Image 1 (cartoon, helix red, strand yellow):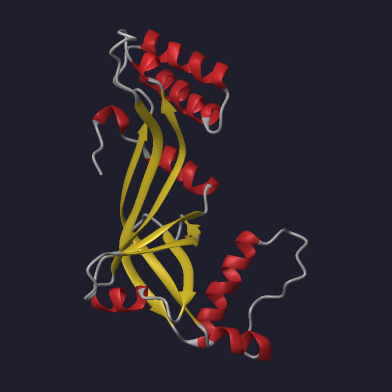
Image 2 (image 1 turned 90 degrees about the vertical axis):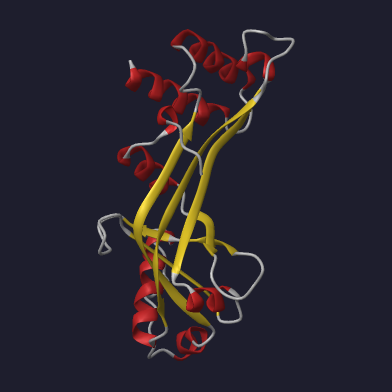
Length: 214
């Protein structure tokens, strides 16, 4: 992913996005297949865990998923989170409205690292319980997963868990950082008037990054 200096997101910025977005694409490139394996998935990100200081991702997949062959061939993988994207119209993005070039504003984060496959029933139950704690409402009646409970034990046999130990983070927030301040404010005004899907979030990113750079 190309990241210009004016698009780079600092640690606080990308961590704030990951805290709000817990669905992404898990990508494994190893194995004998012709293409990388891409699995859309919910995940639980633990910022204070892991052995490389960048956190730990917990997720799980069904045993028939082709991702396992790829991971067993090459344990390195990445989780991609894309968020807060909008189309920036050609007239907004240029001082020459008749020959302007449109662009996209977006946040994109890649959590890269080494995977650890979890098959042991008790460990897998703990991983799933951690995910339940993250996703279920506070008043959920769902008990923690237990390998000693018959229906849970049957379900555990159908899946495998993944711990992604995050070793590197690529984080990009492309919101007009190469434009002069007055032009960025004009684009923010356009986004506010259009008020389409994603426009409000993109505008917040644009203005926040503008304030931080001046």
